[in-house]
Image (cartoon, rainbow, N blue to C red; front, side, top):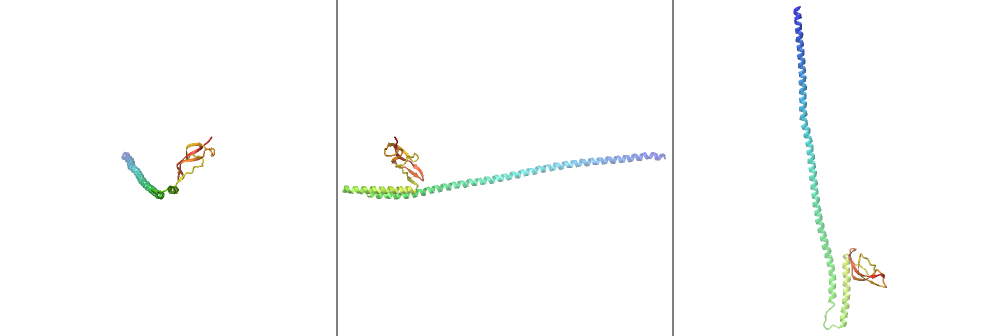
Length: 220
């Protein structure tokens, strides 16, 4: 009996010690697991963060490449547009020069008819040693007629090319088409009207190329 009483506390103490050790072991294991999990989570976070940053950098790089591509395409279109515009300028300049040359050629060709008429008119005056006065008067009349016809032909040629004479005699003075060189009172004419043409004026395609120099009736 006494021995039993003596041994019982020892067994109880041993059980307590075993239980305490197991508890400490469990706590240590849990602590170790928590620490291991925290370290693993930290490592995972550290590994995932560069990946996210890497993805963002890749996205920015792709955007930069796309913008560079757009800029290159825009530059290419700009250079092509400049080249096309310069080609158009050159082509237009050549066409204008060609048109001017053709217009000048046609005008010069038409003037040849007037030159021919002048030559015919001058040939009517033949210098003869024994020509009579009556014959000379007839030659002068023919010359006047020839010059008149030549002038008419010349004015028709100018008109075909847009150059037309300004009619001013008897017209009201207009400073846009007339240039008054002098004024003279004319009792039988209305003041401010043109009564004398000193130099004819001309229109070119409906616009005044040169105003007429005229004499104007002076008012009282």
